[in-house]
Length: 415
Image 1: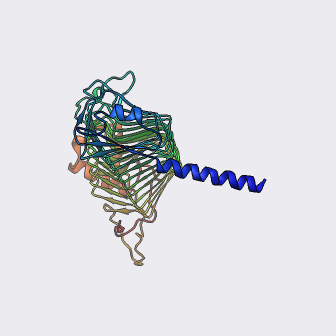
Image 2: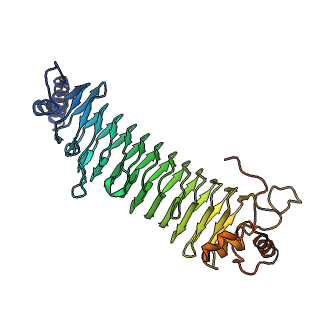
Image 3: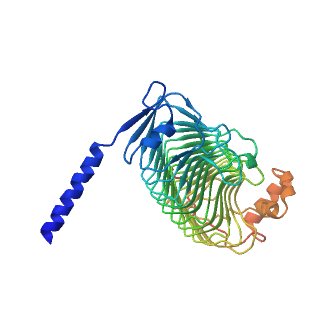
């Protein structure tokens, strides 16, 4: 039995080696063996490489239904003429690299993409340029895929005219790395996606959110940069998320946030920078979140935590130059603030242990007034408001007494 198994294994290895030996390269382009991508695909076999030379290719919808490597040489352009989905990937183990893909069809009925991946695994999409497509890269029911170092740009001016840059739906174990996304509805969109990593992406000037994910659990977002998106970043109905070393910058507007957390639970945030946003973080119905060693600088509100949030721990963060460091819409606080640096803290440190001797109440009376009456913001910087805030700090009566940092740090952390 053992000898037969050994011979069978040896035969399989020989066949595998033979298949690799016979993998071919099929050149496409003017003066090449194949004049069109479609003709090369028709004669290709599993494991082949289709090498596309520089040029303009208008071939409608191209379906990739074999395990192939499709490489561009000199950045060939595949143009969908605003009519077609350009590349439809319907086989496992496909690599697409070095192409310029532009002008896909536009319709909300079947959501065409520049590259759309259908119910397969182990796809690599790397170093491509995608211009003015409805959806840039669209993955559905995909697993173990890598989307890396692509540039995606769209120029639509209305949300209904554009899909998302990288759109992932009901997928698992994805790696979204080093992409640059601009001008889409949402830069990166996750829905029902699990166990994935989003790392070193730049998402800016998108019409709605730079990053938008819902019902997507156990994912990690690391060292991404989100700037000047219509409404910032939105995270909804999700649990067990890790967000480390991301930057959220210049997201301004009535309903714009550095990050919006809605119905989020059991998450960890560290090393993130929230810079010049209307609101750095807005938490609504979010519980058991640990936020430590983050920077909130020059925002309208550093953090707005609704009264329906509980069990959150905010510790060792820097709050610097915000109009309001924190705000809430209720009087009961079931969250912990501890050991943060507040630039508005005016206490002292007699024992020189770098911790303020007097507890700090970061919620100002004016923040409470504005939360309930937004037009009151017109009185900001008036003498009366300054007097009210000073009086409230000396004798708190209207702000929640337990909204307090008992160990305020005397100097900012090096973050």
